[in-house]
Amino acid sequence: MSTNTGTAPQRPTDLADGSGGTSKGLAPSQIGLGAAILIGVSTIAPAYVLTSSLGPTVQAIGPYLPAIFIIGFIPMFLVALGYRELNTDTPDSGTTFTWVSKAFGPRIGWMGGWGLLAANIIVLSNLAGVAVDFFYLLLSQVTGRPELAALAQNIPVNIATCLVFVSLAVWVSCRGLHTTRTVQFLLVGFQVVVLAWFVIAGISKASAQPGHLAFSWDWFNPMHISSFSAFAVGLSLSIFAFWGWDVCLTMNEETKNGGKTSGLAAGFTAVVVLAIYLFGSIAVVMFAGTGTTGTGLGNPDNGENVFAALASPVMGPFAILLSLSVLSSCAASLQSTMISPARSLLAMGHHGALSKRFSRISPRSYSPVFATLFAGGVSTAFYALMRVLSTNVLNDTILALGMMICFYYGLTAMACVWYFRHTAFRTVRNFLFRFLAPLLGGIALTAVFLQTAFDSWDPSYGSGSEVFGVGLVFVVGVGILAVGLLLLIGAHRRHPGYFSGTSLPRSAPER
Image 1 (cartoon, rainbow, N blue to C red):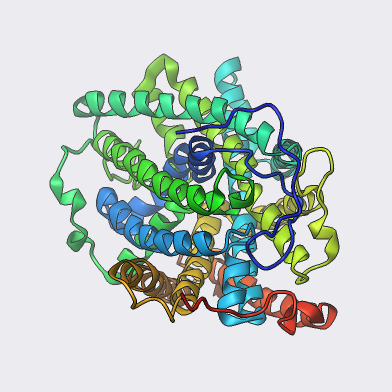
Image 2 (cartoon, rainbow, N blue to C red; image 1 turned 45 degrees about the vertical axis):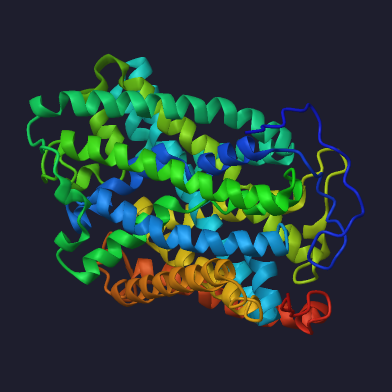
């Protein structure tokens, strides 16, 4: 796998970008397949996902983590096949925004872009939150002063530290993909090595731990999950766990042979992460069990950060390495996740759906600096608001994020089906990859979105936080879509070229 380790980006050309417009100014051929997979894994952030989602998932479905990860992988992989077809046809950094606009028109396309941006803003805030927690935990472990870990619960200190982390991530992102790639090699490599150590140690020590569970193949059987609502919660969290592979498609204009390589990178990323999750979840369930006390995964005190409770029992004097791994995972993902919203905003500005300021490219780094700064600023503001409103900000934002992911992934999958409607039945391959796979994936994600929206109206869904008697998860998830509709009305007046279909017209390939 090529990693394209050149020292500087090539100067962008004026060739067409594949979407009917001219080059956005991004430098082509900066990364190869290996680097794209690395950045994809980094964006998903396996160590961060495991520590922040295993607790809420076990509390919803019990020990059946392997089953729910496999079930969550299936619609994601089906949708990824549709993404690959769209990317091969139209490699554009706007991904969902561009493809949905071409399939369904500018209004639905704008909402698709909004869904992608909202999901990224939510996860950036969540990543920063976990990074803050583990930063102060790490300080307490290094200095031997437990009181330092409590600083993460001090809201002003927490928010200020979050701002520092986001600022560093924005700074690296503004320097371009070359710097991003270098940083990711270091952070992701360390993360994977420590996770492998944790898995081996957890499985080998499980039998001596109070409350442990013996390995069971039943954990792979989703039929043991108690109800469809519980299944939907687990699936929503599982979908969140795989989210982020589409960053490989967002970089398509900056990847070698992006029309092909980006789609392959997305598929490989999903498979690699599935393997990490299966081994990681088995080790955690075997060692900690599902009890509600001590290190049990059902203990609500462990829900936000499972590894914080398991680091010392599993790794002993080397527990600090697990804290460093999660911190590096958050830092890596916080930085690489900036790629998607920045390039989506760039595409929306380039195609006339937003202010032209978002389409500005740095002549030095060939990166969308204004769009990156905007994404970082909004994510910090969202985090500060959620930290004040929610008693369990990490859990609530993860559940709301699952809704956003289902919305825009599902919409993109349906756009694939409609966009290729004239060619879907001409060959067996077209039928499988342009029709059946994205259709099934889109239907599955839509069903999870609707079930989650229905359940989250109740404040008991999530942390129990509410706004005027309505669950905070519903307010955040559905409320963000409502805000998108309001912004759509304003954008419609200011950007008539895009909304008339002039700058990004609807189309469908005939061959």
